[in-house]
Length: 308
Ligand SMILES: N[C@@H](CCC(=O)N[C@@H](CS)C(=O)NCC(=O)O)C(=O)O
Image 1 (tube, rainbow, N blue to C red):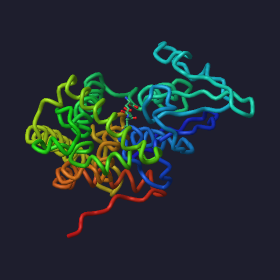
Image 2: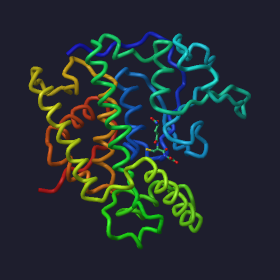
Image 3: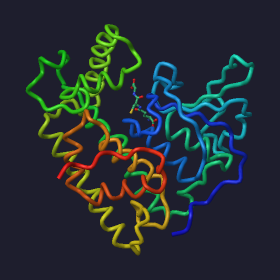
Image 4: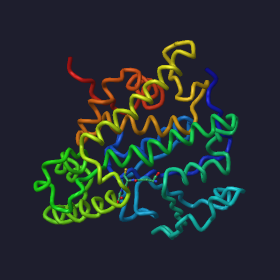
């Protein structure tokens, strides 16, 4: 398998804010893992810090900061990433600090000066569309099943009749992990507010109107379909123990960063046991993530394998 093209661009000092300080470990956010994978596929070095959604340019993690960097080259010629996307401030030492949020915008911005290779450039129009559809399936559909709250606006203990994953069935695990930086008793109040905000959002988005069995069926169908795709991709290439890629090519596409992020997020998140059980029923899906982890994240702890 040919190596992914490495860039010759001078590498700026990139700090990636992941929401948690857990160095040497994957974090629970699939979008953070996606961005780290995308950087590592290209061999781009970065340092990590915890940061917080409150400090993030778009109120979400991940986000990045570039220090003392002229950001005019991190603006793509198509005009999608404008310099106004970057939030600029002056650090204590007088240097300019530019920050940008959203994994997709960050990837586009780093691709503009050639720091990241455009790994989808050589794909056919059909494959480009499949790649985008797979990312949308995960980021804009499956994601909501994972974070799904109870559709009731009541506090979790009062809505026991529905199955709920990260933020409902496993509310306390999720709250204490996601809000780790907020001390008690403020965390309790912020947890309730976050719960209510997301419940309302999911009701509007639609996921909040399904019951637990329906959501479980939808999640299983998605992972089953992805398993079929990965089994076909794996069998289409000579198996030499190296990573195989979702769309069957000889290198990763954008969808691989996202898919790796979602598989790993499920495998490590102790607030999502139902999804973990679903994924573990598909050994090719875990093998896909394991091979990518082994090659690109040898310095990170791997998720625990189920006890047999
Ligand atoms: N479209 C964003 C999504 C990022 C996202 O949803 N991050 C979540 C964590 S997985 C977050 O920061 N949520 C905090 C909040 O919504 O307040 C991306 O690709 O970066």
